[in-house]
Amino acid sequence: MPGGGLDMLRGAEVVDLTHTLRPDFPLFPAYDPIEVAERFSVADDGFFVRRWAYDEHCGTHVDAPAHFSADGATVDRLDPVDLVLQVAVVDIRAKVARDHDALVEPDDLLEWERLHGALPERCAVFALTGWGERAGNNAAYLNADEGGTLHSPGFSAEATEYLKDERSGVRAIGLDTASLDIGASTDFAAHVSWLPSGRYGIENLARLERMPPTGALVVGGAPTFEGGSGGPSRVLAFVP
Image 1 (cartoon, helix red, strand yellow):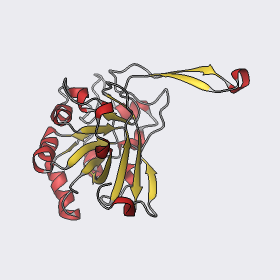
Image 2 (cartoon, helix red, strand yellow):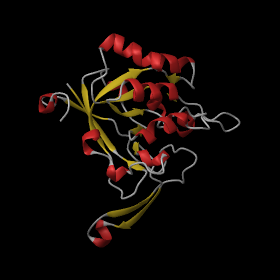
Image 3 (cartoon, one colour):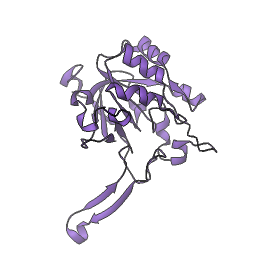
Image 4 (cartoon, helix red, strand yellow):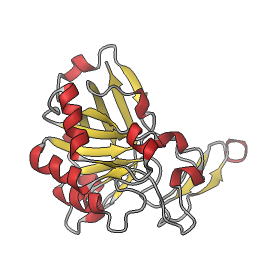
């Protein structure tokens, strides 16, 4: 286990960074609604089972490299070592308060390092935008204008390129919005930059405000859907 092994888990607070998946959870508009149906009940059948139907990218979920790369690793081929990482939380809430299309930029990463030291050798970088507080309200979370364009913060391609080129130990990025890119993006530049490099992303994270800027360990419970482009995930953080 990276960065201190089991010592990091002794006495740690477990913070669940996962939104409960529900039929009315806000979805990126490209995807079909989540459907849930009862198949068996304890009263009638002696056991309880429901059937879920959903696109892979719903709720708190992982984007595998294959999501934006024809020859990229599918979610079942992610290296388990890359699912257990130290995490750096970059707080851009002040920027988002001024601009709903705010971007995580290289300067934000450099400022984090000025305050907290170099990014860990193997880590995830999560952006705390404050957007997770809107997840109970679809309209506020997707934040579409009158023309249907979404407005929410995200990573800039300059930031993802910087991490790839200058901080290659970063294996994952994530944030508390529906997309790695800003909502208004039409070219999905952050996805295109990041995922084909063999790294992964996590979208719709919850409770990032409970995370320290540094020192926590995150476990990304990515599903092993054979050939999948991603999937709903249970993401847990261990905070010393």
